[in-house]
Length: 322
Image (tube, rainbow, N blue to C red; front, side):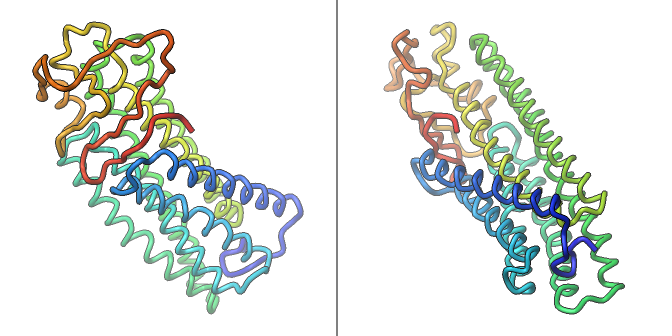
Protein backbone atom coordinates (compact mmCIF):
# COMPACT_ATOMS: atom_id res chain seq x y z
CA UNK A 1 0.00 0.00 0.00
CA UNK A 2 1.09 3.58 -0.63
CA UNK A 3 -1.24 5.32 1.80
CA UNK A 4 -4.65 4.55 0.27
CA UNK A 5 -6.10 3.10 3.49
CA UNK A 6 -4.27 5.24 6.02
CA UNK A 7 -0.88 6.58 7.13
CA UNK A 8 2.18 4.49 6.33
CA UNK A 9 5.82 4.61 7.41
CA UNK A 10 7.67 6.48 4.69
CA UNK A 11 11.41 6.58 3.96
CA UNK A 12 13.16 9.84 4.80
CA UNK A 13 13.67 10.77 1.14
CA UNK A 14 9.99 10.33 0.32
CA UNK A 15 8.94 12.21 3.46
CA UNK A 16 11.17 15.13 2.51
CA UNK A 17 9.76 15.10 -1.04
CA UNK A 18 6.19 15.22 0.28
CA UNK A 19 7.09 18.08 2.62
CA UNK A 20 8.74 19.98 -0.24
CA UNK A 21 5.69 19.56 -2.47
CA UNK A 22 3.52 20.77 0.42
CA UNK A 23 5.61 23.92 0.84
CA UNK A 24 5.60 24.72 -2.89
CA UNK A 25 1.85 24.27 -3.24
CA UNK A 26 1.03 26.33 -0.15
CA UNK A 27 3.31 29.18 -1.22
CA UNK A 28 1.96 29.21 -4.79
CA UNK A 29 -1.67 29.08 -3.70
CA UNK A 30 -1.26 31.90 -1.17
CA UNK A 31 0.52 34.05 -3.77
CA UNK A 32 -2.24 33.33 -6.30
CA UNK A 33 -4.91 34.12 -3.71
CA UNK A 34 -3.43 37.57 -3.07
CA UNK A 35 -3.12 38.11 -6.82
CA UNK A 36 -6.79 37.26 -7.34
CA UNK A 37 -7.96 39.94 -4.91
CA UNK A 38 -5.39 42.42 -6.23
CA UNK A 39 -6.03 41.97 -9.95
CA UNK A 40 -9.82 41.64 -10.01
CA UNK A 41 -11.49 45.02 -9.78
CA UNK A 42 -15.01 43.56 -9.62
CA UNK A 43 -15.14 40.44 -7.52
CA UNK A 44 -17.96 38.58 -9.16
CA UNK A 45 -18.59 36.30 -12.11
CA UNK A 46 -17.83 32.68 -12.84
CA UNK A 47 -14.16 33.25 -13.64
CA UNK A 48 -13.47 35.02 -10.35
CA UNK A 49 -15.32 32.53 -8.18
CA UNK A 50 -13.93 29.45 -9.91
CA UNK A 51 -10.40 30.84 -9.53
CA UNK A 52 -11.06 31.51 -5.86
CA UNK A 53 -12.55 28.06 -5.18
CA UNK A 54 -9.74 26.25 -7.01
CA UNK A 55 -7.11 28.32 -5.20
CA UNK A 56 -8.59 27.65 -1.75
CA UNK A 57 -8.97 23.94 -2.54
CA UNK A 58 -5.20 23.53 -3.03
CA UNK A 59 -4.10 24.30 0.57
CA UNK A 60 -7.07 22.36 1.97
CA UNK A 61 -6.07 19.26 0.01
CA UNK A 62 -2.33 19.68 0.62
CA UNK A 63 -2.68 20.27 4.37
CA UNK A 64 -5.06 17.34 4.89
CA UNK A 65 -2.77 14.99 2.96
CA UNK A 66 0.27 16.08 4.96
CA UNK A 67 -1.43 15.72 8.35
CA UNK A 68 -2.84 12.34 7.35
CA UNK A 69 0.44 10.96 6.00
CA UNK A 70 2.39 11.88 9.13
CA UNK A 71 -0.34 10.87 11.65
CA UNK A 72 -0.78 14.44 12.89
CA UNK A 73 -4.58 14.36 12.76
CA UNK A 74 -7.41 11.76 12.74
CA UNK A 75 -7.29 9.73 9.55
CA UNK A 76 -10.99 9.69 8.62
CA UNK A 77 -11.46 13.39 9.34
CA UNK A 78 -8.49 14.25 7.14
CA UNK A 79 -9.89 12.02 4.39
CA UNK A 80 -13.02 14.17 4.34
CA UNK A 81 -10.91 17.30 3.86
CA UNK A 82 -8.78 15.53 1.23
CA UNK A 83 -11.94 14.80 -0.77
CA UNK A 84 -13.34 18.32 -0.31
CA UNK A 85 -10.08 19.97 -1.37
CA UNK A 86 -9.79 17.59 -4.31
CA UNK A 87 -13.24 18.53 -5.61
CA UNK A 88 -12.51 22.24 -5.27
CA UNK A 89 -9.06 21.98 -6.84
CA UNK A 90 -9.77 19.72 -9.82
CA UNK A 91 -13.27 20.70 -10.89
CA UNK A 92 -12.59 24.30 -9.90
CA UNK A 93 -9.67 24.34 -12.34
CA UNK A 94 -11.86 22.84 -15.06
CA UNK A 95 -14.46 25.57 -14.54
CA UNK A 96 -11.70 28.20 -14.73
CA UNK A 97 -10.72 26.85 -18.14
CA UNK A 98 -14.35 26.66 -19.21
CA UNK A 99 -15.14 30.22 -18.11
CA UNK A 100 -12.68 31.75 -20.59
CA UNK A 101 -13.56 29.52 -23.54
CA UNK A 102 -16.33 31.92 -24.61
CA UNK A 103 -13.62 34.35 -25.67
CA UNK A 104 -12.55 32.11 -28.54
CA UNK A 105 -15.19 29.37 -29.04
CA UNK A 106 -18.80 29.24 -30.20
CA UNK A 107 -21.70 28.70 -27.75
CA UNK A 108 -22.36 25.13 -28.91
CA UNK A 109 -18.82 24.06 -28.06
CA UNK A 110 -19.01 25.83 -24.71
CA UNK A 111 -22.23 24.00 -23.76
CA UNK A 112 -20.62 20.70 -24.70
CA UNK A 113 -17.62 21.42 -22.47
CA UNK A 114 -19.88 22.34 -19.55
CA UNK A 115 -21.75 19.05 -19.99
CA UNK A 116 -18.46 17.16 -20.00
CA UNK A 117 -17.36 18.81 -16.74
CA UNK A 118 -20.69 17.96 -15.04
CA UNK A 119 -20.59 14.38 -16.34
CA UNK A 120 -17.03 13.82 -15.14
CA UNK A 121 -17.85 15.22 -11.70
CA UNK A 122 -20.63 12.65 -11.27
CA UNK A 123 -18.82 9.72 -12.89
CA UNK A 124 -15.28 10.32 -11.64
CA UNK A 125 -15.42 12.41 -8.45
CA UNK A 126 -18.30 10.80 -6.60
CA UNK A 127 -17.46 7.06 -6.96
CA UNK A 128 -13.78 7.54 -6.07
CA UNK A 129 -14.70 9.72 -3.09
CA UNK A 130 -17.06 7.05 -1.77
CA UNK A 131 -14.51 4.28 -2.23
CA UNK A 132 -11.75 6.35 -0.63
CA UNK A 133 -13.78 7.08 2.49
CA UNK A 134 -14.99 3.47 2.67
CA UNK A 135 -11.51 1.89 2.64
CA UNK A 136 -10.31 4.35 5.27
CA UNK A 137 -13.24 3.64 7.57
CA UNK A 138 -13.05 -0.14 7.13
CA UNK A 139 -10.37 -1.52 4.78
CA UNK A 140 -11.56 -4.48 2.68
CA UNK A 141 -9.15 -5.98 0.16
CA UNK A 142 -11.71 -6.26 -2.64
CA UNK A 143 -12.82 -2.64 -2.19
CA UNK A 144 -9.20 -1.46 -2.03
CA UNK A 145 -8.54 -3.22 -5.35
CA UNK A 146 -11.54 -1.49 -6.95
CA UNK A 147 -10.35 1.84 -5.59
CA UNK A 148 -6.84 1.39 -7.01
CA UNK A 149 -8.27 0.67 -10.46
CA UNK A 150 -10.80 3.50 -10.37
CA UNK A 151 -8.18 5.92 -9.05
CA UNK A 152 -6.19 5.46 -12.24
CA UNK A 153 -9.35 5.81 -14.33
CA UNK A 154 -10.41 9.07 -12.67
CA UNK A 155 -6.97 10.66 -12.90
CA UNK A 156 -6.73 9.76 -16.58
CA UNK A 157 -10.26 11.06 -17.15
CA UNK A 158 -9.58 14.43 -15.56
CA UNK A 159 -6.30 14.79 -17.45
CA UNK A 160 -8.05 14.03 -20.75
CA UNK A 161 -10.72 16.58 -19.82
CA UNK A 162 -8.12 19.32 -19.38
CA UNK A 163 -6.33 18.25 -22.56
CA UNK A 164 -9.58 18.62 -24.49
CA UNK A 165 -10.29 22.08 -23.06
CA UNK A 166 -6.69 23.21 -23.65
CA UNK A 167 -6.80 21.92 -27.25
CA UNK A 168 -10.09 23.69 -27.91
CA UNK A 169 -8.61 26.88 -26.53
CA UNK A 170 -5.49 26.63 -28.69
CA UNK A 171 -7.59 25.96 -31.80
CA UNK A 172 -10.13 28.68 -31.00
CA UNK A 173 -7.53 31.30 -30.11
CA UNK A 174 -5.57 30.71 -33.29
CA UNK A 175 -8.71 30.84 -35.44
CA UNK A 176 -10.39 33.87 -33.87
CA UNK A 177 -7.33 35.99 -33.14
CA UNK A 178 -5.75 35.62 -36.58
CA UNK A 179 -7.80 38.45 -38.22
CA UNK A 180 -6.96 40.79 -35.33
CA UNK A 181 -3.26 39.94 -35.33
CA UNK A 182 -2.98 41.00 -38.97
CA UNK A 183 -3.28 44.59 -37.78
CA UNK A 184 -0.98 44.24 -34.79
CA UNK A 185 2.76 44.57 -34.38
CA UNK A 186 5.33 41.75 -34.13
CA UNK A 187 5.11 41.60 -30.33
CA UNK A 188 1.38 40.91 -30.39
CA UNK A 189 1.80 38.31 -33.14
CA UNK A 190 4.12 36.31 -30.89
CA UNK A 191 1.53 36.17 -28.14
CA UNK A 192 -0.45 33.42 -29.85
CA UNK A 193 2.72 31.31 -29.80
CA UNK A 194 3.09 32.00 -26.08
CA UNK A 195 -0.51 30.94 -25.44
CA UNK A 196 0.05 27.69 -27.29
CA UNK A 197 3.24 27.00 -25.33
CA UNK A 198 1.48 27.66 -22.01
CA UNK A 199 -1.35 25.27 -22.84
CA UNK A 200 1.12 22.62 -24.02
CA UNK A 201 2.96 23.04 -20.72
CA UNK A 202 -0.30 22.36 -18.86
CA UNK A 203 -0.77 19.19 -20.89
CA UNK A 204 2.80 18.10 -20.11
CA UNK A 205 2.33 18.65 -16.37
CA UNK A 206 -0.77 16.47 -16.41
CA UNK A 207 1.34 13.82 -18.13
CA UNK A 208 3.87 13.85 -15.30
CA UNK A 209 1.02 13.46 -12.83
CA UNK A 210 -0.13 10.34 -14.67
CA UNK A 211 3.39 8.92 -14.38
CA UNK A 212 3.31 9.14 -10.58
CA UNK A 213 -0.06 7.37 -10.51
CA UNK A 214 0.77 4.53 -12.87
CA UNK A 215 4.05 3.85 -11.05
CA UNK A 216 1.94 3.21 -7.89
CA UNK A 217 3.21 6.21 -5.95
CA UNK A 218 -0.12 7.22 -4.44
CA UNK A 219 1.46 9.12 -1.56
CA UNK A 220 3.65 11.13 -3.94
CA UNK A 221 0.84 11.65 -6.44
CA UNK A 222 -1.54 13.18 -3.90
CA UNK A 223 1.02 15.82 -2.87
CA UNK A 224 2.55 16.42 -6.30
CA UNK A 225 -0.96 17.02 -7.66
CA UNK A 226 -1.29 20.18 -5.55
CA UNK A 227 1.96 21.52 -7.02
CA UNK A 228 0.72 20.90 -10.57
CA UNK A 229 -2.61 22.63 -9.98
CA UNK A 230 -1.05 25.59 -8.17
CA UNK A 231 1.25 26.18 -11.14
CA UNK A 232 -1.62 25.87 -13.60
CA UNK A 233 -3.58 28.52 -11.71
CA UNK A 234 -0.63 30.90 -11.85
CA UNK A 235 -0.43 30.37 -15.60
CA UNK A 236 -4.09 31.40 -15.88
CA UNK A 237 -3.19 35.00 -15.10
CA UNK A 238 -0.57 34.98 -17.83
CA UNK A 239 -3.05 33.63 -20.40
CA UNK A 240 -5.74 36.18 -19.57
CA UNK A 241 -3.32 39.11 -19.47
CA UNK A 242 -1.99 38.17 -22.89
CA UNK A 243 -5.51 38.17 -24.32
CA UNK A 244 -6.17 41.57 -22.80
CA UNK A 245 -2.89 42.87 -24.19
CA UNK A 246 -3.91 41.84 -27.71
CA UNK A 247 -7.25 43.60 -27.41
CA UNK A 248 -5.87 46.78 -25.82
CA UNK A 249 -2.64 47.29 -27.76
CA UNK A 250 -2.84 49.92 -30.53
CA UNK A 251 -3.00 48.79 -34.15
CA UNK A 252 -0.38 49.70 -36.68
CA UNK A 253 -2.88 51.71 -38.74
CA UNK A 254 -5.50 53.95 -37.13
CA UNK A 255 -7.51 53.97 -40.37
CA UNK A 256 -9.07 50.68 -39.32
CA UNK A 257 -10.47 52.23 -36.17
CA UNK A 258 -14.05 51.46 -37.15
CA UNK A 259 -13.41 47.70 -37.36
CA UNK A 260 -10.71 47.03 -34.78
CA UNK A 261 -11.64 48.91 -31.64
CA UNK A 262 -9.00 50.14 -29.26
CA UNK A 263 -11.46 51.15 -26.56
CA UNK A 264 -10.24 53.40 -23.80
CA UNK A 265 -10.59 52.64 -20.94
CA UNK A 266 -12.48 49.37 -21.40
CA UNK A 267 -13.61 46.77 -23.91
CA UNK A 268 -17.24 45.72 -23.76
CA UNK A 269 -18.17 42.64 -25.78
CA UNK A 270 -21.77 41.50 -26.25
CA UNK A 271 -22.79 38.31 -24.48
CA UNK A 272 -21.66 35.23 -26.37
CA UNK A 273 -19.37 37.16 -28.71
CA UNK A 274 -15.91 36.07 -29.65
CA UNK A 275 -12.92 38.16 -30.67
CA UNK A 276 -13.75 37.36 -34.29
CA UNK A 277 -17.28 38.67 -33.83
CA UNK A 278 -15.89 41.80 -32.19
CA UNK A 279 -13.67 42.34 -35.20
CA UNK A 280 -16.35 41.90 -37.84
CA UNK A 281 -19.68 42.65 -36.22
CA UNK A 282 -19.12 45.59 -33.90
CA UNK A 283 -18.62 49.01 -35.42
CA UNK A 284 -18.37 52.36 -33.72
CA UNK A 285 -18.75 55.68 -35.58
CA UNK A 286 -15.55 57.60 -36.03
CA UNK A 287 -16.86 60.39 -33.78
CA UNK A 288 -17.85 58.05 -30.95
CA UNK A 289 -16.90 58.62 -27.34
CA UNK A 290 -14.17 55.97 -27.68
CA UNK A 291 -10.71 57.16 -28.48
CA UNK A 292 -7.70 55.63 -30.13
CA UNK A 293 -4.30 56.77 -28.97
CA UNK A 294 -0.92 55.71 -30.17
CA UNK A 295 1.58 54.71 -27.51
CA UNK A 296 4.10 57.31 -26.39
CA UNK A 297 7.66 56.44 -25.51
CA UNK A 298 7.09 57.73 -21.99
CA UNK A 299 4.12 55.38 -21.46
CA UNK A 300 4.55 52.24 -19.37
CA UNK A 301 4.11 48.90 -21.08
CA UNK A 302 0.51 48.72 -19.88
CA UNK A 303 -1.09 52.16 -20.23
CA UNK A 304 -4.60 51.40 -18.97
CA UNK A 305 -6.35 49.37 -16.38
CA UNK A 306 -9.07 47.81 -18.51
CA UNK A 307 -12.16 46.00 -17.41
CA UNK A 308 -13.14 43.15 -19.71
CA UNK A 309 -16.91 42.74 -19.58
CA UNK A 310 -17.77 39.78 -21.78
CA UNK A 311 -20.58 37.96 -20.00
CA UNK A 312 -21.82 37.81 -16.47
CA UNK A 313 -19.26 35.05 -15.91
CA UNK A 314 -16.31 36.91 -17.42
CA UNK A 315 -13.46 38.24 -15.28
CA UNK A 316 -12.87 41.89 -14.50
CA UNK A 317 -9.18 42.20 -13.91
CA UNK A 318 -6.60 44.92 -13.77
CA UNK A 319 -3.66 44.72 -16.07
CA UNK A 320 -0.34 43.32 -15.00
CA UNK A 321 1.52 40.06 -14.65
CA UNK A 322 1.82 37.79 -11.72
